[in-house]
Amino acid sequence: MRIANNQMMDLNLKSGSKPLSIVGINSANDAAEYKSRDRSYKSDLGQFLTPIPIANFMASMFSKRSIKNCRLLDAGAGVGTLSCALLNRWNSEGIKHKNISVNAFEIDDSLIPYLDENLTNYTDVESTIHSEDFISSATATRNSEKFTHAILNPPYKKIGSKSKHRELLRSVGIETGNLYSAFVALALREMEEEGEVIAIIPRSFCNGPYFKPFRKFILENAAITHLHLFKSRTDAFKGDAVLQENIIIGLKRGTAQNEVIVSTSTDSSFSDLTSHKYNFEQIVTTGDADQFFNIPTKPDKVIDNDLNFFSSSLEDIGACVSTGPVVGFRLREHLRDDISEGCSPLIYPAHLRNGSVNWPLEDGKKANAIHRNENTQKWLYPNGFYCLVRRFSSKEERHRIVASVISPEVFGQAEFLGIDNKLNVYHFDKKGISENLAHGLAAFLNTDWVDEEFRLFSGHTQVNATDLRRLRYPSNEKLIKLGKWILKQNEPTQDEIYKQLGISVG
Ligand SMILES: C[S@@+](CC[C@H](N)C(=O)[O-])C[C@H]1O[C@@H](n2cnc3c(N)ncnc32)[C@H](O)[C@@H]1O
Image 1 (cartoon, rainbow, N blue to C red):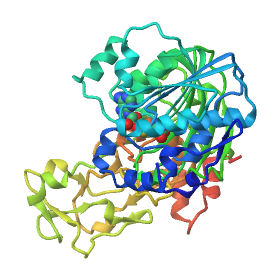
Image 2: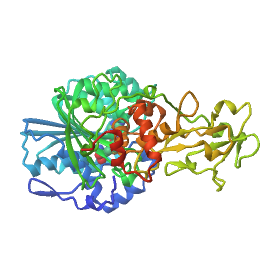
Image 3: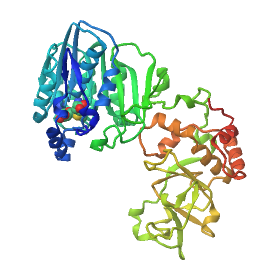
Image 4: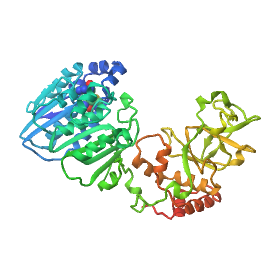
């Protein structure tokens, strides 16, 4: 939480006739004390508190229903910002529940007085603060009443495979390796039928094998109602420099899966909020054994409404993609600044600029060559045409996938090339591909269309060869035709490239 954030200071929320402030975050002294806390302490407790605008947005994601006995769970409550946001929304929108109780779990004793003060402001709400570990409490056998609402910004931290927490989670059938997924799974378990959970969590659970059991747990126990994506990678928790891409997920326990609302905003100002409905199959593809969560972000750019417009696999187009084979630090003694007798050119991401190669670089920061000998030969590819894709894009880059073509003539008489492992390389059987295919592939990969496709299944900034294998491509003929055409153009526009590929952008 950005304690000193003015948006928070401005908060003047109503409960009955009494103006309220959120105590723990409204006093300059507390703010200063909180801000000065050791970062490692905060990160030990996964203590990145929710900014008010995000808390209010999360509160707005619950349905409007009025119920008799409303029981709200706030696990990892901090100073109670999230509960207060929801209680305030009900007050301001006149959403009446006959009885309201809040159960707030917070392990950090130093936050309890603030949490207490914030919640006791709501005189008509029965609040219970549990100054204890939520995982131990929620996994203990007891017959407590189920919750109707849960609002969460859980701690983010790995749970060791042999830790007490892991054991407790396993004892109730939850297999997961991070506190955030554990909190969401336990909250879901504590909900009554149709109970709603709104949680802000890292996007990392959407794909990859590590969170597969968590995705399965969600899909078996709840319907996904809403996904909100922040387009900026760092903004949601700017004050605490959380370098995670966050999403807000809305879940409803035990109900049939209907359409899913997908909303996006660049940051926590929500000034460019967009919202669209999607069929569930557009989020989790039927038959996908991994149950990846795809999050379509730009519906205004859907191409023919058919995300499977291209259907060729890499095998179909006669190419392979691999991570660049040269691992510089393992072959350090064989790297050279300049090309000389017995050396082959070595290509790093730094050598790629504006879709082609700028080699050698004279700034001395990266090697330009690798000595060819019995230790290095097996890592080299014959000189030829290749399409290269960076594995790590910079934050400023518009696209995650940035492709370039390398042409053999740049390297003169060189017989072989070294390609760094921070690059992915399209090749054929560890040899070059045709000039036209290399250019066609690069032009295709650099389109907005591919970038959007890629973002559908990857929340990561990293682009790995496995991701590129998962993409679908235009046919070999189409790519070659595109490559031939591109070579005759000056600077073709995206729309001209789409036209060549026979697709229209709606
Ligand atoms: C990411 S912060 C969010 C706080 C608050 N919900 C908010 O949105 O501002 C997570 C909170 O969980 C608390 N926490 C960490 N581990 C916990 C545990 N095992 N049980 C209960 N609370 C825990 C931390 O102290 C921290 O206040």
